[in-house]
Image (cartoon, rainbow, N blue to C red; front, side, top):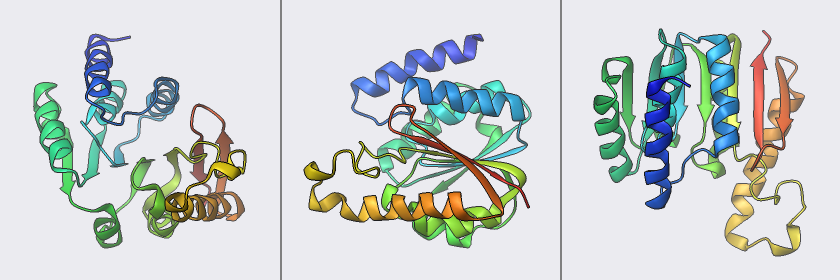
Length: 200
């Protein structure tokens, strides 16, 4: 592990202590494995939190540029500080606001998309993300199992407030697994990860 990654892992512990949602450890390793192997030129990250996952992706792919979306004011402040702290601010383009408002207005092509934003909008985002994903590009989505609710494992314990999220995730999974332009694998790693490649 390089020195920058070691610092980021230490900083992640601070984020956890402050109740900031961070990508789980094994899911992060899986994400970084893909980014390191693919070396994408343009990465879109939906849901930056403190910016640590984005910085980690830039650390393993030195020629990548990151485009991040975040709406929480505290996270925007912390991620902006962290981009400067770790010297990657010139490689980051930051969109501040709701992803559901920003994504439909975006254009261009991305080689890698990391989706870790509002789960209730995953299905809504998918057509836009597919259009922005380059051929042979990868869409990596976190939390697609949503505590076992999506598979039905925890159905008896579902709270009404989660119904919209569960329905969106089910529709998202159906979309990425049944679209002939896409090739998808769903992994049970931690709270569920999907990895999708655009074939054409």
